[in-house]
Length: 500
Image 1 (cartoon, one colour):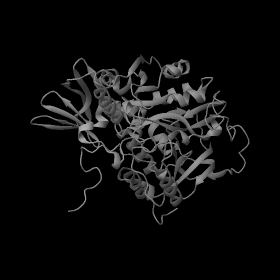
Image 2 (image 1 turned 45 degrees about the vertical axis):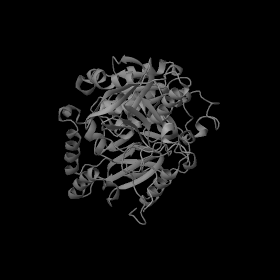
Image 3 (image 1 turned 90 degrees about the horizontal axis):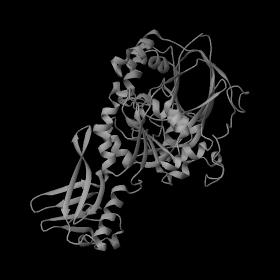
Image 4 (image 1 turned 45 degrees about the horizontal axis):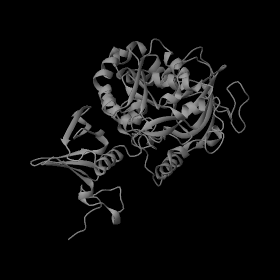
């Protein structure tokens, strides 16, 4: 008879080594006369006289003894894109017995694993998000999840553009664990920049995890960290989210310094996004429309560029990604200690990190070389993989590798090649296209030329059409993710050979 695969039996407790596995009796709680609750491999097994139910540990939000009952609240799928809160409760004969409390604690340990329980959440609602439906989605889809998980939630509506910057700048970071934005990608951008203006900016950005509850037209942050644009499923992901250091980039332009968490673009993508604001009624189709129009025109955006390259070819990029997948060190080790003062990151918390490469107004950093890029069609730098559903522009991005992923495409490629590029993004073949240049970089300067005006997009926000410089800070920010080290997007597998 063939041997069983490890953990094939759902009643086996995976937490303990094989030689010390608890017996079924030691992981089972008898509930009344007709039911038992058993801690299985990855689910709670609810066995009644005529039915058996398996509730994944990930879906379990809370469990407690109340009087002579055990009450367990969990997230139950109601549709493919939504969950609702469900409860099971059973009588227990000895509610005060140490074993009963130990069993409940064992259940919660498995349900939360590395994630923090009972998170303290400052929740910001953009009342104009999702065509004005953000408040409705919060009350219907999000609030019940946080309540069932016994999270402490402090709700505030933003009143105007930039309000979230002020809220984050003035908040007591010791009073919260998470700032959650019920919005598109605009509020997270404001929150990061608000935390970045605090006197103890580095400590604030390390202490507070910034997350998104997808309630806007652009929900890239949730797609990357939660793998969904469902408000209720995203709420569950935040409840179970693992604290994850994330790279942030400083943008210097004129005398201003801002933080970017998502992307920067000049050329095709920036113009296709920002120049089609009047077509928001088309939804995500407006972006595709904007790109197609400009591709067919063979639009170019001349500029001068200097780049600090860390991985110059696609094989090198693949290898960087492969090594990161194999790195299972603690997430906190993925912060740049020089940005925080010492190895424990607690000695130097004042302000943002110093700029190693200066600002856009300084001389070109040592080792950087400015070169003309007169045929530039698209200059697109990303810190996350998905920029929208099914648009995995940056499949090799990682939350905290100290790099941005840079995609550049010439503006005068053939129309057929251009259209194939757009189709390839949705099919996952964009990275391998020969006319797509893909690099990992840690900084750059870009100087538009031969144009009086144009579009520069930083995290979807329009910036002045003037030179700017970017520098990456490894692990400066903090988010919540499902894994603690990768995005919820298909990556790039290592290959023996590839085109540069």
